[in-house]
Amino acid sequence: MSMLDTTDVTPDSTPPRRLLNLTVNGQRRTVECEDRQLLVTLVREELNLKGTHVGCLNGDCGACTLECDGKIVKSCLMLAASADGSEIVTVDGLGTPEELAPIQEAFWNEDGFQCGFCLPGHLFAARDLIATNPDPTDDEIRQAIAGNLCRCTGYQSIVNSIRVAAAQARAE
Ligand code: FES
Ligand code: FES
Image (cartoon, rainbow, N blue to C red; front, side):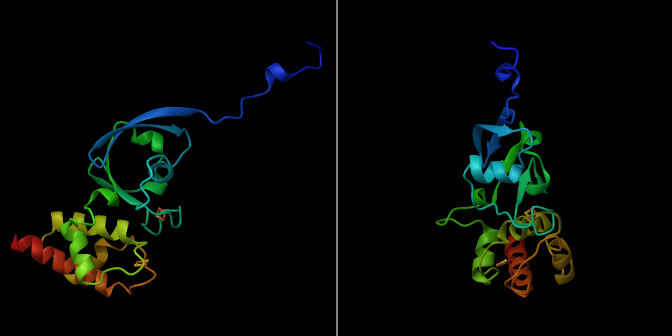
C-alpha cells in the first residue's frame, strides 16, 4: 500500500441498522431498521402496511396515526427503534373488507370519508373517545378529532359517524 492509499480509512457510508421485535396487528414480526428511521416509514416500507399514511411528517395532520402499546401515536413523530418490543395496531389491523370494525362500519354508512387519507387518525381518535366516553356530545367529538386534518369532508359527516358508532356501542 502506498503512503497515499486511503482505502482502508474510508468511512462506511451505510447507515447503521438494528433488528426490532414487534407485534404488529397481532403477528410477531422481526424487522430491520435504520437508527434514524421514523416509525411511519418502517410501517409503510418494511412492513408494507400502506393504510398508515404520510401527510405532513410534522405531527399536524394525523394521517400517520397508529396505536403503540395501547396509546395513540403519530408515527411520524416517533423513531422506529424506540418501538422495539412494542405491540402495534395499524389501521390495517382494525378490520377486514369482509368484516369491518364497528367504527369503520359507522364511517362507511355515514359517509365519514371521501378519499380516506385522514382515516387512520379519525378512526383511532374515535375508537379512543368511545372507549373512555361512551356518550360524547358533538363538541366532545370535535375536540377528540382536533389533531386530525381532513381536506374532503368538512368534518360534519365524521362527527355524525362517531356519534352513530358511539350509539351502536352503547346499544350493544
Ligand atoms: S404525517 Fe404524521 S401527523 Fe402528518
Ligand atoms: S376524506 Fe379525504 S382527507 Fe379526509
